[in-house]
Length: 492
Image 1 (cartoon, helix red, strand yellow):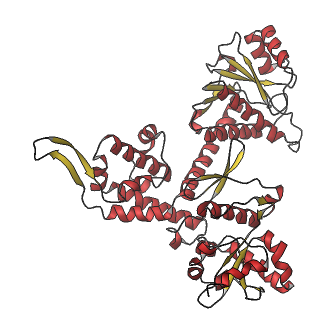
Image 2: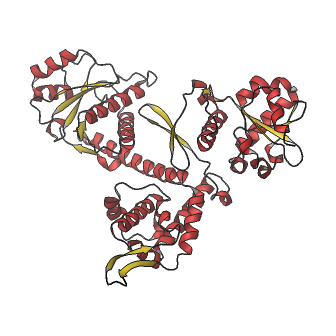
Image 3: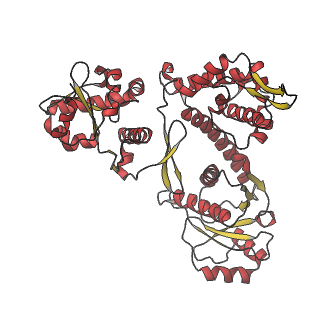
């Protein structure tokens, strides 16, 4: 996305952008510096009259007027913050005025926009911090609006400021590229990769159908690939700009040198080639290019697991990973397979502990994956309890959220048992391998053995056989009192 952001030494009124941004004040009055130059070039009286009609704009926001005598069709007036000490929400307000300006550009069908470095003049915002927040805001907007083409230009006149901006642009470009690589590997379905490797390894020949028929007619030749071969081209996201990216970044690069992004582009290129020309994929099977690409993905996945101290042997399991983003102002949870779901609203206490975040996200993943029940997030974690059993030894188990344990379960336990439960929670979140082993069957990390009389005894997850519990995961029920436990003993 960052290649759509440029910084040039040019006057903002001389750019050919469809809209330019004025570093405005809250009263929208013409001033000095960039603001004065824009007012003068646009026609002071006409522009001031349009601004007076709007009247006011809050710091951290922006409004739009016609460009009048300027080549630009529109002028967006963005009000940046005055710098005090960075503790008066200056970064948030500066980010907000850039974001609002970009949204206005899209809403008015502009595909190019030129900014000054807002607030870095008489408003006193430190220039290095101003660049960091400006480029962050622009990059975030581009990453969330991939369906819209918008070129962003920063127009500056000072060589030192130009140099600072390009250095920050380069730093963020490298940082964002690394983040994109991590995201691709986070979302990768390990089971799908394993199936793809096995399918392509066994793809010895391609059968062709068509040609001259017995009755003399001729049917167009079409290939029949072994099961799973064509599907292997879609283990990573599809690159919507594959044609341009393939020529720029992938041609001439060996498979063993490719990044996850380059492999994504190459796989998209092959899939689209096959779509338009039957048999295009055959070349990549015969020269072993496809299997080399898949092996390279596996190598990258191994590196990713090692970096995050996860057990490499479990990389072909269902993905445990998730991350959260925002779309149209709503929190969205992106699961390991790339599917998205709108998250329930969380309170501020959600951000207080890592455990709360992990527990809440695991709950959402479990519910979305299995479609078992609907729930609302109360505070930091889900309020629910699931019961399983009995197992081959006649034991039954209950898995409960921290909140539900606090509300209902702990009152039936001794202080020592409560402490043991909390120790088990810490043990669960401290051990990625344990999480991976339990991802199929566990909703919450508090586990207790359930007795016939309704009494509960805490037990560590390491002492419960996941294969036994997995047999009963379809018998889950949301429970809230000891009477509800009785059903699980009926089939003994």
